Image (cartoon, rainbow, N blue to C red):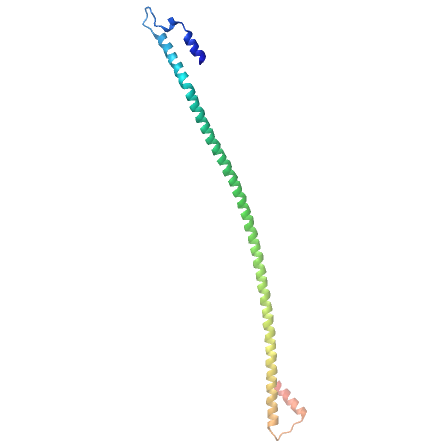
Length: 170
């Protein structure tokens, strides 16, 4: 840029000045004026435009970096969530197995308690049955004895009493 400005300043004045002769063509001075105008514009606007574009590029790159960071964070969060999901699935499977085992244990415990209770009820039934049989035998014996001793005219021997009791018992 500086070279261009120096070059324009060193141009001979005759080239820059309007033609003195016979032509109506003033293209060269106009072109030189345009080049000078462009050089001045460039000199005045080059640094602010460069600065503006540098700031714009920095803003875009910082936004791009932020987006990249967010993308990386979201990927890491996704991986963490996938790991947690896998752990939750494993824990759910373990809980299901544990629940099945506990259900089996409880079912077996209930079965065992029911068996014990049934055995106890059977034992009570047998005891009650034996008690009722003994009670019946006592009643039969007492009735027989009451009949025998209630009638004063009969005198029986012990063998006869036993045989009568046996007949009544069966």
